[in-house]
Amino acid sequence: MSKVPPKVRRLDLAPSNRGSCKDCGQLMPEGSMRVIYQTNSQWHDGFDDNPVHPTCGHGVKDISMIANLGEMRYSDQLLLLEHIGHKVSKNAVGGKQNQLCDQVWTKVDELLDHNKKKEMTTFMEYNGMRIERVTKPKNKFELAYEVADALLFGKPGPCPVCDGVGTLRASFAVTEQQVTVRCHGLVGGTTKCEFGCNEARAFGAAGVRRERVEIPPDLFKKKSFFQGYELPASVQALPGGPPAASAPQPAASAPQPAATKSRKDLVRPRP
Image (cartoon, rainbow, N blue to C red; front, side, top):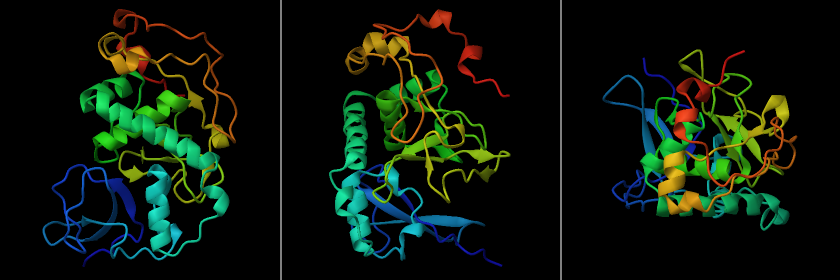
């Protein structure tokens, strides 16, 4: 007996120029937004992902069917919402949420221009952030998004539900008045964590905080992109949340040598 495919659609960016839309058959340029819907697979016991253009047939009838709208570029969000007939407030365009989203994606583009996937992975591992997305590694766009957000505003603290370090991801949705957060982690090893997925969770809610990041010594010395970055004196939460838990620290011109940081220090102790 076949299972019923989930109604929720996931959004992502095409990782290459080789994929095509399952609706119109046209190629999808690298970095363009895709709507992913799932159908029962003919080849295995599970579901297959079907990527389509946001303006093609994907069965999205209302905003509740879109899982991660706020993790896309603001212009892509508006395109999809216009296609499904969702009215957007005039205040949403050009407002604070719009500006923060554009800041993150500008930094994403800079990261992708100056760094390889391996270097972004090094940054995330050094700061205790996960490089997997539930069942498989994150693509370069997802890595760059999380690195950019952490560099600009500090990394999200641990999820209060699954307590996974680095599984939380900021969301700059057109439909929200402030930056929210949702979890991409697991509960009990196999079940997807639902924190922030069914209802918007602002930073500061249920103990979700922003935390200071550090630049790995190798990247600081060798990469011009990271050499120009100054560690913030303190990391403040985005609008709607409290300041970070750590006390303010002075800006640093360079990180401590790698020898002074053991692997044990990089892992957040469980309560």
